[in-house]
Image (tube, rainbow, N blue to C red):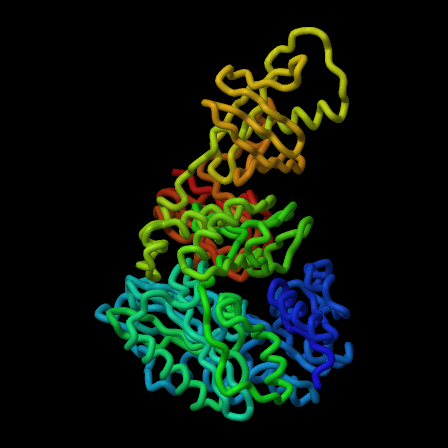
Length: 617
């Protein structure tokens, strides 16, 4: 019987597995890199073992160090989570060879399905060989791992070689395996998957479908169960194909078989031989704990002949530290506060005060809503996200809310091209005109409560300036100190209440309520992030025209071949690549000109705003 589990992962999934283990009375062991020394999953585990280093290659991808950590901590089982080594057959063998229980499928099943090239061969599908213009568009895809890393859509033949190089580098960084392949890219399809669970006694559960069509960079953003509106023939086809994959590989444990549904046909994509990020929606609909079932199966227990009957609908949104309006650039910094209404489930690997760094995935949390109907679940999730307090780095929270309320999504007419069509509208600025005034009043109330007192003389208008983040719009607001408290300088707005954490304003006969959180120069008013600006601009912040600044902290992993100072560059030409949170990001020339400065080198770590290059027009 399993008594102590080491989770060979970090963040949200480690915390998720620990939660079930605690409920079952099982001791928990965490592993951590140096940047994760104070992370939530380390704090929540009973025991923790350091993996020296910072990058995944030095730490979470070192199978030898993880197995040694399990033995040193006295664990008798290893749960791989998802990502990193979760679909690595050699790691599974190393775990069992060390006398530990592997909470996952047999290594042979991982080998058959974890490599997408071998999985397609097993299902009778051959990847593309020599790519020609007639094959376009195509998808470059990492053979190992998932999460959208190592994936590139190629629409021009001339771009194929560069995208292959980039995909290999990204896959190697994320999964320790740089193998990639090319397959046809099916546009306008829906991403549908089947959750499976199998025991060692031949029982196979097919736990319904999920729709994961809303994706950016081929990484899922919003998922739901069951997949709405599928044709009965498609449902039968994906179920039969999923069961065939399970039985053909002798699969054991939890896994997911994924399809792209287009034109009434289900195209097999891959099988993920692990627990999926989106597993909570299946748990909600079937009323089960998939991690607890994984542990039972690993202990050799027999599943019931049939799974529970599904009921209702569940929707999950992934909350990322990223700026959707800036090509989903990852964001870093201190997460001051993360809180959601109790009407939804929150799975997270971070909490108030944690630092969001550059080394790992940008996902902060998963927010899950369940209801008897799809419409009710979607409405509940959108409302909870809108009311959530997310104070810290820029996130995709507003994008999630708008996506959930978009008519294509509410009408279940979405496909994988959703964000390509609608991203500009979904990220258009929609600023609350009263937020800057509420921020100013809350800050003024903080000063007033700190120093007290009131002078019995008329007060001149006070002026504060704010910049809305990430849009960059600047606002100037005016208010006054009066005998009765604080007042807006605008006669059309009445201050009903003003305290450091709460402001109530009345305009046009309607009261508006604002929750405020302030952390130095950063102020958060409901869903609006503001930066308090100084009265005068700092001259040192000016930089030369044509300067390319780092949009995020990261590492310079490549510089374009032959690129040196004095070289002629064209508009849109890629100059260098930054790696942040396991994704590569291109830095391109904004216009044609001469490269007059290139102060960085490969391998250098840079902070946000660091000078990368200067292109003189």
